[in-house]
Image 1: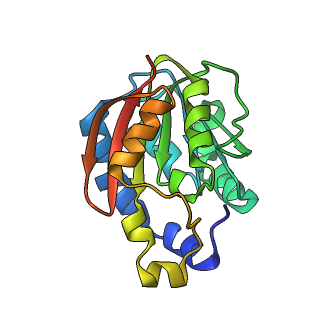
Image 2 (image 1 turned 180 degrees about the horizontal axis):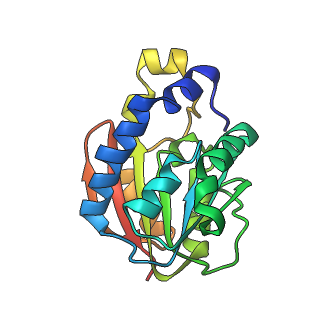
Image 3 (image 1 turned 45 degrees about the vertical axis):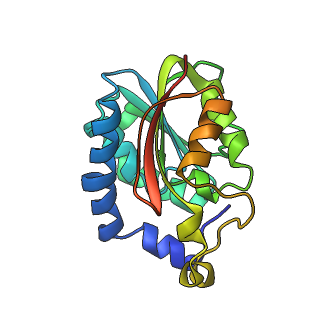
Length: 196
C-alpha cells in the first residue's frame, strides 16, 4: 500500500532518518548482530536510508532493495549512486519478491510489513528468498498504534488483520522463520528470525 502525503512527509525527514539510524538499527544489531558480508535485501526501501544502514552498520557486501512507490525508488537511486554496483534497486511488491529462492543472507524490514494487507504472504516471500541460515531483521508497528484515532485520521494503513508482538512472532514461525530474539515496546517491536 502506497504512503499518503502525510506519511510520506513523516518518512522523509531528518527526524525519521535519525530514529532509523541511531535507534532502530542499533536495536536490531543488538538482537541479531551484523550480517558479516553477504547479500542483503531491504523490502520497502523508501529513499534509501535503510540501504545505507545495511551497508554501513550491518556490513553487507551488497544490498538489493525495492519499493512499491516509483518516486521513492528514484530518490533512493540518487541517494545511493555513490555505492555503485553494491546496490541494486527496483519497483516491487513484498508479496511477490523478484528474486530466486535462497538468494539472500539477510532481509531487512524497517517498518514495512504493517503497510501490507496480506502481510503473511510477505513473510512467506521473505522465507522463500532467504538462504538456509539467513536472518530476517524486522522492526514493526503494532495494531495498538495503528488504532489510535489520530493515526487513523492522518495515515492510511490496512485496518483488518493487524498484529501485535505475539501475533507477529507466531506468524513468523508459521512462515518457517525461527524467532531468535525479539523486543516488545508496546506500540512497536523488533525481531530477528532465522530460516532453518
